[in-house]
Image (cartoon, rainbow, N blue to C red):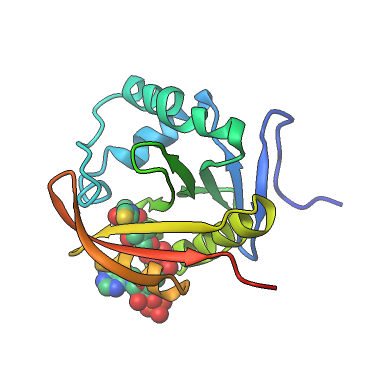
Length: 180
Ligand SMILES: CC(C)(COP(=O)(O)OP(=O)(O)OC[C@H]1O[C@@H](n2cnc3c(N)ncnc32)[C@H](O)[C@@H]1OP(=O)(O)O)[C@@H](O)C(=O)NCCC(=O)NCCS
């Protein structure tokens, strides 16, 4: 059966949803991360300067994304099943500075407003609770980042408090492992 999606043997799939495939990044994906993070609108609320080179994207993959994978956590590349297009990333990251598992997502602008972040984030939460047996997952967004706050609320995370991070005002949300 031809399912229309070529999966190289090196590509580690994390999970599939109705419309999406989430997989681990590799160093070869630097052009995709560059394409995503060079857009000033995409990084507007995440306290990161837009990237100016593919080399910078490779450093992000090597130093920030790949080190999460040995713990089965991480930011995972999102591909549309219908055409294999790269839409952005979503996933769970351990933040040692605050000892928290953080849910995050970032999409290319052309994919905003289609429910993709909601779909990927819902399954990332489920994956964290069911497959990784996490007890609590935190989500944070700049108070003006209404799209991100919309996702956190739509997937059922509970508002905990406001706070400051990187000198920016943020809203903090939390989800707990559902009781069986
Ligand atoms: C945040 C982001 C991933 C949202 O992705 P998305 O796929 O557009 O989100 P969804 O389509 O799943 O929308 C979820 C809900 O958010 C709300 N929402 C989305 N965009 C919105 C906007 N611009 N303003 C207000 N609410 C918005 C809607 O209520 C939507 O629910 P609905 O479908 O009932 O209308 C995307 O805007 C993005 O990549 N932004 C740049 C990176 C970023 O800021 N990441 C988050 C850092 S905390």
